[in-house]
Length: 283
Ligand SMILES: Nc1ncnc2c1ncn2[C@@H]1O[C@H](COP(=O)(O)OP(=O)(O)O)[C@@H](O)[C@H]1O
Ligand SMILES: [Mg+2]
Image (cartoon, rainbow, N blue to C red):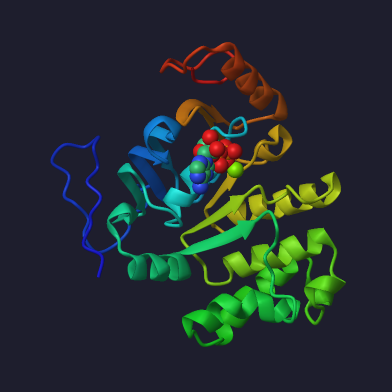
């Protein structure tokens, strides 16, 4: 049983909310979250005291140069790796305090994953791949689940492909199956790490608009790691990372504002906190 609670820091006297999530609790959060790989002279500080909130019901992209800590941040938020110090939260649960068995259950029951390499099971059909998380959780496929399955399949345009195996599907179709699989158990958060990295630009655009629709029309929460400004512009917000630190925050991004934000990172010696600039980038 999860006993960790989220105490709002901006409202003094607020009661901690013990047993349920509230709409004002972010879907995921990091607090002075750090990750150091290795030790001594070869130690790499992949994340350096990161503080960031990810709103529920939003599509947020995490961007930054290669090696800036994007995947590390995602892995810590998703309970796929352990922190060196600081805290990560999924809703009201402090994931950095959970043991292996609890983390396995949390990933199975509360998180959906989309990877660059699709990770579908080759001997299963598209339908079997989509339903796999329910199978693993021992959930029954009742009428409500069927209806959600049909919604996902229709939204993702997979209707005619359900009996196909992954090898009989294009890359874009495989990734759409992977998205349906990530959404089938209605997880609190879907984490996507470079979901368009193996797709051509047209298939990539399809996958990105489906991720956006899953947030806008189906009410889901998506956190996506990408190094592609065009991909990031599909999100509601872009969090910029540089050298393991939060280096910027762009609301309602466009490819242009994301590129401007990345350019600003390159011209900065060290990221500093500041006010939003005219281009919408906080530096
Ligand atoms: N398992 C690991 N062992 C050692 N160093 C790692 C490991 N994973 C990542 N790193 C290092 O941590 C830093 C951040 O990596 P990563 O989070 O993968 O960045 P990004 O996803 O932004 O490219 C990089 O310097 C990378 O080399
Ligand atoms: Mg990465």
